[in-house]
Image 1: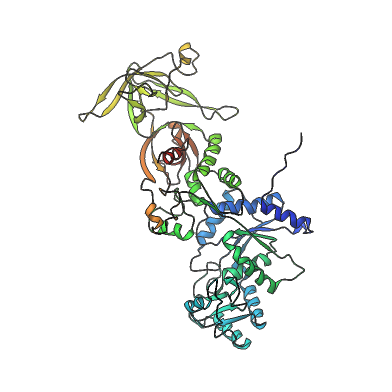
Image 2: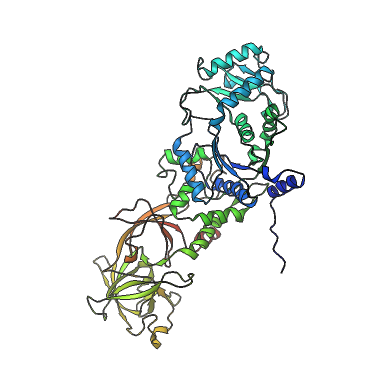
Length: 561
């Protein structure tokens, strides 16, 4: 049988073409270069899987580099969170690098550019510089400081470095072409003054390099062979190459930038600025709120690293942006959890069932399988008693023939237990049902081997013993936004589309096997969905987050609307 040949995406074709053209495979090196100004989100997961996946495929090193050039927005917390996320996704980096490691080298190169007449200090404010840039159809105009002498530029740049000026007084600009068709090439800013403490270099620097100046040179210093980034950086490639031209040594590897399309996810936003706003305005509890599209949020909600990697693999790499329905991500979570999550029983909205012909005070230990996907199968004990809880929606006093759950005069099977028949109800003074009284068939216990144990009835319900049930807090999470594209309506703020039903908290009752459940353990609550133990859990109270339902209920809702 012929071996299946893997189809390559366009980025892999680029690498293969370079190798066929004589590029030494031993010189392949990739990198994942996040800015530590927020937590990583699901979009970053695709980039992580791409770059580290290439490292695995080509047995080549991958750097984790933090492009930490803006101390106003960057924090050590974000660095630590990013490292946790990459490790949790299952990847290892070769070198942990920081753009701040290269501040001195970048400064030295900038001095060389000044000496070569390729950079100058501009003393205009930001608004004036922006106005002089022109438009895509009209050329820009030269700064009055563009032709300063090399000596004056060197003196001013050193004073900028030494902290002798206030922020905004001066910037260093590359001298390229103010009439260039690509507006990014119209004398871009390389350095700005910032009197801010950096999370790694402290107050050593009063000037900080701009991203465009830093990024490509950092790739070059690290000898990264292929620099992959998203499509918004396509216009930056020309500037990336111009900056490399100024420092490139032909005896070294020259990085190649290429771009791939973002994969936008429905019913969410992934702009760090907008995610930060959700945090700051208290819409969510933090960057790792289970409603957030951050990797930390997805982890806390109960997603597995395998499901996120599978999602990234499924959507693939492309040259055009498109919107991915969040239901695909949910499907990937559901598919993996189905294989690994133990089945347990919990009741979210309980109504008491009294089995009137079951002995009072008796507790029976019944056997239940943990996961039908296991091989070999394993089992646990669940207690059964005269009084149990079932879901309130699983009982109707009156119901038509299409209702296959419990109704007066009707029979259902209790999962792993007996067949019961509803005989009567007890109501409070307002007419609300407080108890359902049933009888059970003692010969119908599942797995007992009696003819009655295989008797077919239409419905099977989950349940828990009232006497042994463990109260737990359950956080029922839904999509954070009520529309697929909350940023699409330019006349409205994306916050206008926050789903008010994105979180509901309830007290549920679970079988006692969950009494010692630990944070990040995942379970299938039978007939209800997949749930994960939250880190807020204590010895006194276990907290579960709903990860995803057993099926895509939103698809039905949206198809009806």
